[in-house]
Image 1: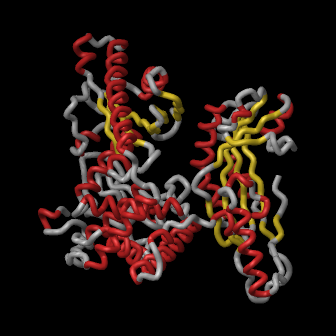
Image 2 (image 1 turned 135 degrees about the horizontal axis):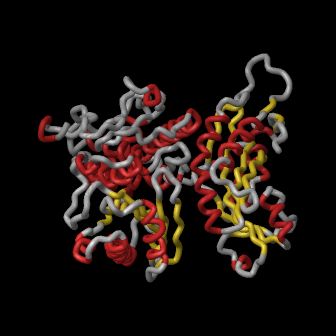
Image 3 (image 1 turned 45 degrees about the vertical axis):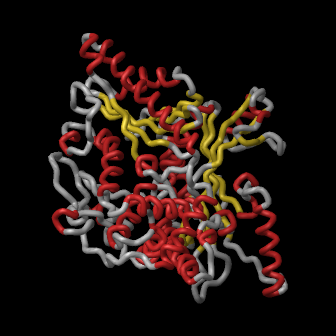
Length: 551
């Protein structure tokens, strides 16, 4: 549905078309002040740098297309006319990016330029470009990507060869026909921009949408629930939820949109889908989200459906565990915002840091290791992309209530004294010296001759409460889940001599210091001791389930 046909945006009429009250406008002003205090807006200097970087990439793409065209026998004139164009998508195109945010970019090229050309010709050209300090490629991913840092601005660069002999400068991706005869991976690459543009067309007030989304995005990041790959909601899904609330309250201020976001989403009857418009047909023989037709679509727990053709579920990675975490955090957010509206709390309380590393007694540490830093970057990305499969396997473990993945990995370097020690480190046997391991940017890494690069991911384990009549200790056996996960990731071009994958089952008290902010661990421990003393003299027995040994 469009507003032209129905008089409103969305699949249902608005709940209210009333303007915000004076109190709601005051709350919006205080919200925006807090967002500025939280450093969610970039400086003008960084904005200009982004424009310079995008200009360089746009020129590089044209040069790349010309070079490939000439190498394939096209004339000078035809090679010049072959064009090439970049489109941004994600938070940058939505206008809600902050300091240090990546720019999601798709390089649209003509049909005679291939994926192979992208990695054999474009990647070396990119590495040689002035201002480029980092380049990482993932050519084997379903949607191949090159990550780069130019003038300290990070970009994720996708490639999309369209079914056209040339790419004009005025090309628009809005027309569904541009998707004809494309591979599914290319359709996905192009649809990032198409989705972002459609979202902006479907909200009644773009600035209100942006302000409210900045708030929700910051809240989700602080609560460690902002990650599509780990089974939470990614930026696109959060944006669609905020857009739906904007449709239901088209004249509300941003602060009121945030309040209603939490009110409505804390009561949403999942698995009813969130739709911004009716699902449409199109020119392709491709699958469109349809739970009546496809059993896998019926299995989606929190379906949030993209508005652009072909409509897909943006939240297919959500598991039973991550859904529980998401709904709990949304309910807590609703409680906090209600206090803000009542004047008994501040917006800053909504953005307090998560308690993931204090929340559980038991964790699984997943460590991806490699000798080479570039190889490690790719290997860690592979392991992280498969982590949700570990979560789903753990959900079948007896006595386990849920498995909560943390949303990011921690990169470290192990400095070994010899090659034998380095090989042992790949198997998880690290040097005993406390000075052997450090952060990636530790100056001591520079001259270390025998290094192992690692990325550590963490999964929190919540044990089911004891049932009436249960006697004796409970056993938490995660060994089968871990073994199956290791088999799966090792099947992905694993080099046993240069790479490693280690899973450890550890107590919360044994978590490494690097997962905490300075002073955080000590402060939390002190608060816990004080609370125990006040409540019961500190004599509460600290019963824990027995952990089965994991090799």
